[in-house]
Length: 448
Ligand SMILES: NC(=O)c1ccc[n+]([C@@H]2O[C@H](COP(=O)([O-])OP(=O)(O)OC[C@H]3O[C@@H](n4cnc5c(N)ncnc54)[C@H](OP(=O)(O)O)[C@@H]3O)[C@@H](O)[C@H]2O)c1
Picture 1 (cartoon, rainbow, N blue to C red):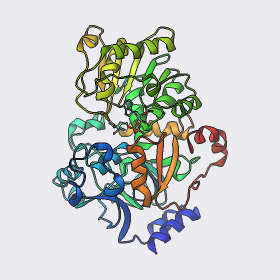
Picture 2 (cartoon, helix red, strand yellow):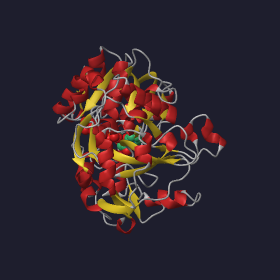
Picture 3 (spheres, rainbow, N blue to C red):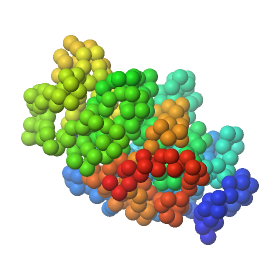
Picture 4 (tube, protein in one colour):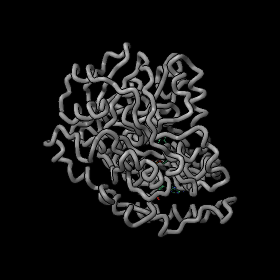
């Protein structure tokens, strides 16, 4: 009943602070969880065979006490990230280790150490309650959340909050994530919901948009500039679809790597012209048993890039596949260029020929999520219609397992959304005139 009251209030469009402050908060809520007593369930299986539909549950869980710096948010929609895949298949390690470590920090962090983990690092929704130290945000405000959770008690994090020793990814390294009817975030994770987008569209960019922004645009990442040529792996995927848009918007030239003609088409729809279908090209950077790389294949990729660019190498490689591609990425970067990496989907023990790096003065730059400022700037790009959501498909909360399997098996395009309290897709737009200007761009991934 109480959850229905919350949903009804949101759907009514009333955003008065008193309405939400006076709404009773239920004792429990539904969320997508994994269970600590099941972390061995996929033991001995190949990654691909580990099925998130078996490990993800939809449970009723209690609402914890709110800390002074937090907000309780009614979640209208959320999204699947690759960290949802890692969480659900317990790789590279079960996330309960993160929760246990966090739990040892203080009275409020202790709440996170539970036998279940409510996952999810994106949300859009409405603030229901705020803790006593929160002054900027009020019940009734429409919000999205970025996923950087920091304590900021150490000096180290005060130039760049990603450097905080207690830096965590909310919903991955903390509990009470966004794939649920309610979520708990630190108030300094909140940002305004773009008013021209639906709940599910606005929930979908958060994690990947902020990550791509730091990785490619920020001075903490590759500092992309006008005219740069950027090789973007997984160009129609979660991160890549934002990197492509940012490169184009910044006057750079993306060279998009994808694995099917459909994905190539999506890149064209975003405005990219230079596309490599890695499957059609049949690159084999590693031998059969994955022990040795073949530099001839790196050269073949480099030649293809030069064919497309009229003889130029790339200034930046946007890296995340990791082991499979890293040797090639280092090779194809131009002299003095940058390889900027934020992940290792195919394996984290990278190998590359260091001669190509040092003799050619290339630089490898590491990047991880984004600080509040970067996330805020990335969200502002969405709000201003300079970058658009890349939502292709939306599932119900009950189907989070299937949604996660799609991403695990690389069957998706762009982002996969999840409805939480929103009863259907298409709700939540409060600025239809602004939306009308961007309708085509917003819809280009839908049902792709
Ligand atoms: N550090 C951070 O803050 C951060 C943030 C976000 C994501 N990540 C990590 O970044 C990775 C990608 O995330 P995402 O959201 O973009 O995932 P995604 O939506 O699955 O997209 C990744 C794309 O990369 C391509 N790819 C996958 N394996 C590949 C391989 N072996 N060789 C070449 N291309 C490959 C695929 O595109 P094609 O098949 O079309 O080539 C895939 O669609 C994940 O490991 C994720 O955990 C890290």
